[in-house]
Length: 243
Image 1 (cartoon, one colour):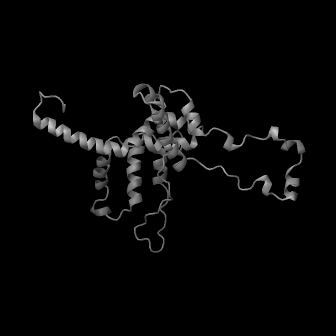
Image 2 (cartoon, one colour):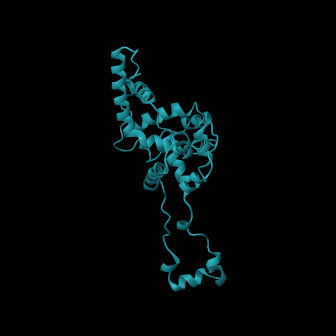
Image 3 (tube, helix red, strand yellow):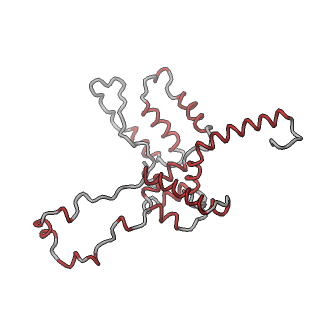
């Protein structure tokens, strides 16, 4: 549109300014976009190689971006609290009843020598997936750490529409008769409103909670709101069994 001389100069100028703004925000979110595409089982690295014609160097850089985020924020460290080298001789003798059980050839593979979740995921072929979140939910036992990373990136809103909608809806929750709701109470109500229609919370479970006895107020707690433990709002419970 910028190069189309048939358009009015005002339109071409407006589009030019819009492109500057788009480039500004894309530069800030390009890594997020690329990680999300890699974590989509339909695309992975093949999308950048086949569709976008990334060079080998660009693919290596992309893989390093995904690897860095995974290692820094999601990969679990597998460290034994107490190795056999740190055990006393008496403890070794008590635990070892059969000397042949400790043969190196029969020892289980060491975690550091195995490929981690990200390597296994990227080495597998792309799959035709319609609902990416359902696919990752089915793979959460195979990729427990990568599953959490995939949920974080693939549930990011593409636009601010949903965010603005939540702000508008949240504004309706605390009317003047409920003006002392804590933040966690509001989060709980908004999550309940979103999760229930999706079948992530069963109606029977909601009814059971409503019928529970009220928790007595603690000393100094005037409004009766209970602080929820950290991580309560993570969507990692079994959907089929309810939350």
